[in-house]
Image (cartoon, rainbow, N blue to C red):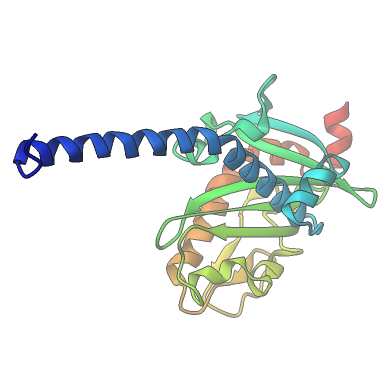
Length: 238
């Protein structure tokens, strides 16, 4: 065999590509269960963080069921029976019309109070952004918020993950007179129950957070409209 021939070079390269591709495919298959577990634990961690329970990923998995007492999926304000909230892919649902989405809702209890945790999914400057907002039992007042991103600029848009940004959401309102007004992310000097200050130098990411909250909350509005001003947990159990 002429190892200096083009045929040998192309053949060797082809075999090498096939072997590497097979190795990568095998690695992806083997690692997928671990990756899925990490994603699920991170989701648990963020849900708990939105109600003020800060745990590591492993700790969150251990105590999650102590706080989260129910996991629902809503569509058009109605509960979808038999659907796993954790199995809903928010990236996919965010591309569907609001009234056709499968919208997960996590009901949590802490210190005798009930909270409703809503997952969010949107787009920042450089890629996807996501998060969770926890509502108090009036399904109007924000108790806590958590945000994350894939590739926003450090020191600018990436600041949506910091307490300086997320702490502003506590006590803010999303309904006014029963209507959904959501939360506006303004440039500075937020002075209403429906506003927070945006990130200096991160206008596009700030706008993305505002649009994400408005868009995702719209999927829950039929539920919010029905239970606003009431103890939603009591209504759900009747």
